[in-house]
Length: 331
Image (cartoon, rainbow, N blue to C red; front, side, top):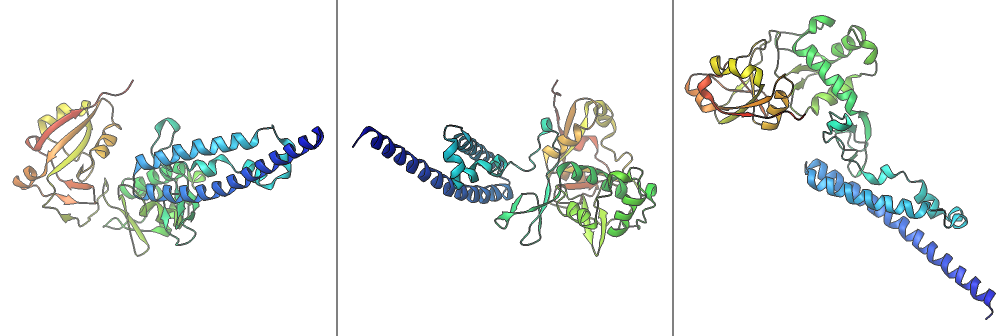
């Protein structure tokens, strides 16, 4: 066999090798994509952040490596001929990255999770995957936060600004709320995209259970400054609750206890992180107060349950505050 024939045979062998690798990579990518998507869905649904981050990290590294390999100009002619090469080269890295949808990242300006609608079951979810397929984006995190703040304000504090007909128990027709936002809110041009479905999805997936929907009506479950009468169930089981405040208000609280101020109720939570989040909204250093619920009951102060994590009382005496934690603000 002459030299030319040997070179042709070598080239043919190399071509066969790279073609085989391209096809294998295509198959592996598709399997990995579906497998990782399913794993990410399960991780997000179970709220296992560590597991989800690990999947994200491994998938991203693998995807970047594959892209770098196939987009290399080393074999431009071969790449243009092979469909597998083209397929892999054109797949966006975001498909494989499978970003963690919604874990709060203040540095990136992300405050709330996106809301998606499953194309199979129609359920509203916070994961881009549901029923093992991709879900349609309904509201992005930025719009969700914007709408959540507005709806909370209208249902709790200033319905009069849009002539919203809220009844004595805090209820209003969802259609009326949408109409008020789009026609009468002072910044209505920013909310022309809002529909009834957006309001329903927002309420159903609110992380703190702020809203309640019943018979095509909506209301805020707690947090009102306007006079409403909501029948809460009295709780006799919870023992420890938390309240977020600031160092600027601590002196007054240690004299007179925790008062509802402009609101109807004092709001307490079972979640220390939620209390810290509230505390950070105020000026001064964040302070978390631990409240003994049994102490409240012994003084004849009833504890009412508003949601799974939010509890309401009329007043917290100083001697029912059993611990004070102050957190330094990061400079």
